[in-house]
Amino acid sequence: MQTNGIPAWKRALDVAFVVFLSPVLLPLFALISFWIKQVSPGPILFRQVRVGYRGNHFTCLKFRSMKAGAEERVHRNHIRELMHSEKPMTKLDARGDARLIPLGALLRSTGLDELPQFINVLRGEMSVVGPRPCLPFECEDYLPWQRERFDTLPGLTGLWQVNGKNRTTFNEMIQYDITYAKNKSLWLDVGIIAKTIPALVAQVRDTRASRRTQLLNKPVLSS
Image (cartoon, rainbow, N blue to C red; front, side):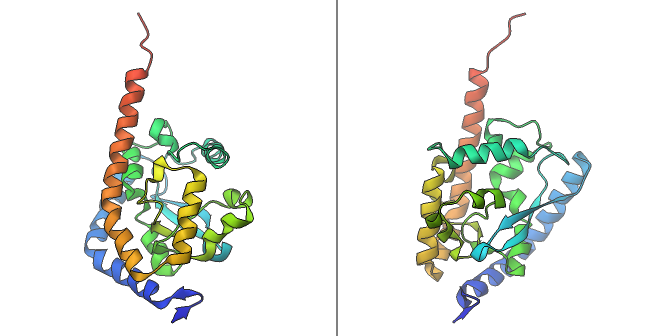
């Protein structure tokens, strides 16, 4: 059975997963919220319009990992560069970003900044598993075949996220998303969820290695 084109098993899995994790999620929410409030003035949550199922827009929630009012133009230019090149989908802050709050890089590399998206899952705007919800300006540049990634709910984790993520190109990400949209199943979702923690560990390791390399290659000014 499907509801609005979304399989009933998928909605049941999403709700069950959030309820199961709630004893862990609630203390984490409180701890991260307290930290953000202590180290940076401004709201705890960052709200941003994203494109979801069938191209519908929704407000995506994240913990704020950057200073309030941080310039977004740099991030948009970075995304556009990745969309029109064969470069790996590395995050801008992997090279260091002065806009980040203390420990903001850790929140982002571990995915902890995305925990509020479990609220989006409960609202039915997202799923635990699915494509990364893109920004409206990205969608404007999509080719017709790339829009097939909107044939399923966006997710917290997904086929792309557990298959290289920051090591893949934009078009490879789209291909993973379309493959998932066409082949989603209960067991595929369970398998992706099981692979998510190891994928996050690998992502943190890659980010740290990248920063170490930058520090070693950074020119030393002679006094």
